[in-house]
Length: 401
Image 1 (cartoon, rainbow, N blue to C red):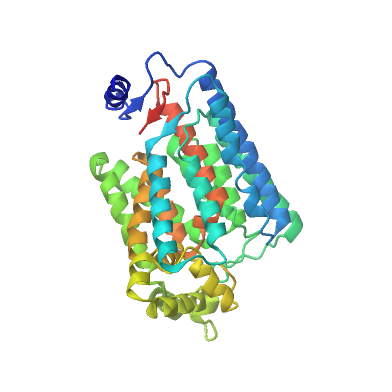
Image 2 (image 1 turned 90 degrees about the horizontal axis):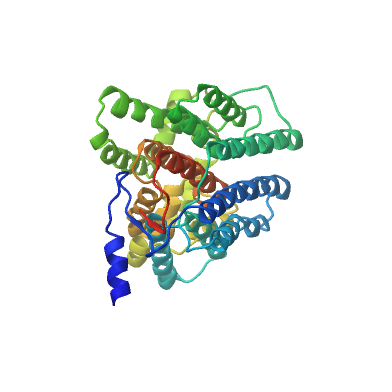
């Protein structure tokens, strides 16, 4: 009982940086534990580079999902190899618990789908990584961006590059999904004021050429400038950031109407809504039909983990929804929308950089698939660990919010 009281008293200790930390009596987080955490962060970054290489060379092979699990055991092994207890984040544990509850409820109602295992592996692994606090340095972020640049270069060599650019057809120099994490580096270097690296990240983002990343970066920076630079209202910026995420979700769930409107704006006589959206209009039509015939339990709890991908595969439309908010609605139901809002709020905790990442991610999810691109959230975790390590002057202890 005394040990339990000691535990509960320590986790209520507040520190100047706003985090609530826990450490067993007699334990500190200096020396070998900090070094192990730093090495763990570096190895996670290196394993991310191996994932990028495998992603590029494996193409559509399902084997790549197995390799996606590499960073988690690497981080866990190094953290537990230190002399002491693991560095754990309450927010990460909450995110994993929420996802587990949503997945369990949807599976209990509907059973499994051919894509259930994939989604549980991918989402579960990257959310689990947010449970661990890693001491990172700024050069780790540079290493991450260098890995993305190398991956982009390899994609250009393997798939070819073109000088023809078109926003309508989303035709770019390379056009790569690596644009999604590259946008994170643009926002990070913008936030820390490193102009030269922000320019490099922006050039790489342009080469990768994903239209939604351009919009997402612009929306995130516009929000930051308005609430922190112009109004100077730091106290309400988090609340407004969450409101923007919710608004983006509503827009994402009404994209069919937006697509038709965009077609009328860009119409040159033969431009269809489906061509303008690179097939997303027809995909949306299939998924909304599935939602229309869903029963009350499916509306509330979803049609099953991976049900969206299974429906598209059955209709010979690939297996990606290209709208993560719609995928969440169909797979996890109305309760899933609220659940994933809470998950994103948990992993992107309060702070200017986290707010930038939260808005950027919410916009990406409108027309892309970061929810099952494991390399996206792992880079987000890596950068946030760098930011936290730079901002915190207090040695990390065992339990943190």
